[in-house]
Length: 302
Ligand code: PMV
Image (cartoon, rainbow, N blue to C red; front, side, top):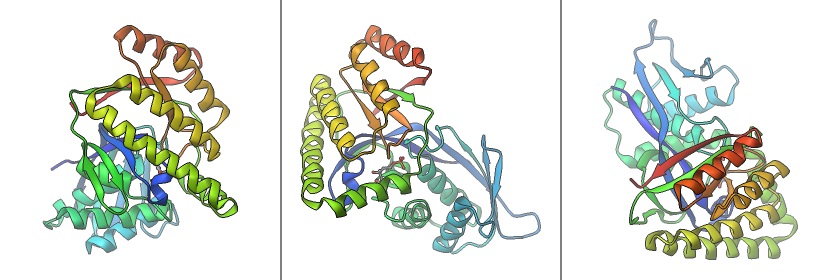
C-alpha cells in the first residue's frame, strides 16, 4: 500500500510558533508518497528518496539517515526498505522533511502490520523532526499527518478552521536555501540578546494570527492579505527574510497581490501570495517568473 503525507504552508506565524504562539497553517496535497518492502537480506532500515536519487541508512552519518534511525526506534522496527517520492520543493519551507518522516512511518507500520494510532505517528515523526531542528514546534509534522487548515499551538495542537470555500495560494520558490535549524537558532539568539523586543514581536505576530483566523473563516481575503503583509514585516524584524524574498514579495504586491510573505523558516525557500481574481493570479505569477522564480498555484481546504 502507498502511504501519503501532506506538505504544508504556514499562512502566518512561523518562528513565533516555536516560542509558544499560534500559527495559521494549511496542508497541501502535493506531499510525499512512500512504500516499504522487506529488506532483501534483512539488513536493517534503508530509505531511497526520489527525485533526489539518494539512499539513506541509520548509520551513514547523514541527517536523513539519523532521522530514519530515530523514527525506527520510536516505532520499534529495525528493518524495511522504504522508497519515497517527494512532490515538494525540498527545503523550501513547505514541510518536505516532516512529510517524508510521516510517509516513511506509515509505510514501515504498514510493512510490519503495526497499528499506528495518531499519537504514535506524531511521536515517531517528532523524533524524526528533532534530528533536523532540535526544537521543532510540531506544526510541520502535525499538518503532514492530519491535513486540513487550522491554528496550531505547541500546547494544544491543531484546531481546525472551517473555510467558506477552497483557498487558492500562489507560491514562488526563491531558489535560495537555508537550513531550518540555523534559522530557528538565529531567532533564539535574537530572543536571548533582546528578550523584551523579541517577545513583543512574537506577541504582535500572535495577534495577527488570531485576526487572520477570523478573516479566513469569514472569507475576507483582503484582510487576510493585509495581515500577511504585516507578518512579513515582523519576520524581517526577526532577521529571517532576505533581499530576494523581499523582492519577490514586492513584485507580487506591485502586480496586485492582496498580500505576500515568506513561508516556513525563511533565509530562502518559498514566498506565498494571495490574489482575488484569475487575472490577478496571472499577473503575480508572471511577475515572479520575470524574476526567474519557479511559480505555482495550490489549493487548500477544497
Ligand atoms: O521551513 P520549514 O518547512 O521547516 O518550516 C519551519 C517552521 C518554523 O516555524 C520556522 C519552525 C517550526 O518548528 O515551527
